[in-house]
Image: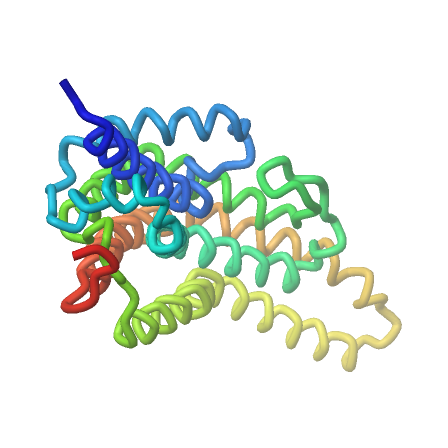
Length: 274
């Protein structure tokens, strides 16, 4: 029979696992999608928490959770809940970096092609999103599914439960520096994805400017709108195979970033319980 202290310990451990999983689902691609109703998402997180429960190594700090809760010592436990939610947020944020880079690069294309005014409602973000950005987001999402990125992200989460103690303080200065570097990836990769087409469109604008000087009677301004769209879409269509290969490499690297971030959150010192 399980006594009261053991029951509180099991319940507290499962709750910490669940909170970390919920934090991950808030940011992660696919799992954090607005298309999934929130009650269903919470239920999925609860099921995954039960599945992850056997893989969590038992520590002395975890065994002390039950007695602390029985003694109504809730403040440290609330701190644990906040820290585990933050761990999930960090891992979910890292898993979303490539998606954010793709959207940033597509946003640059929208501006350069003159499609930034043609925004429409996007159910995935519950707001107005430009056309190329929305197309690129769904393209990257489909490729992410085909490459089993959502399954591999869950494997990375399972690894986090094995190495990051539920009773630890996982945040260090090295982690902060690494997250800042990872955030810069959004802009560098976005520029890399969009730069060939943006450069081609810039050359087109220069050519139209020269044409306006040579033949001022032509309405070059009105001509530039359909020409930019035609050239931009043609180059985008011709580079799809290259884009697919590059995104596949980036999604594979993104999983390694999750493991690296997880290892940075392994506390070398400092436990709230034991």
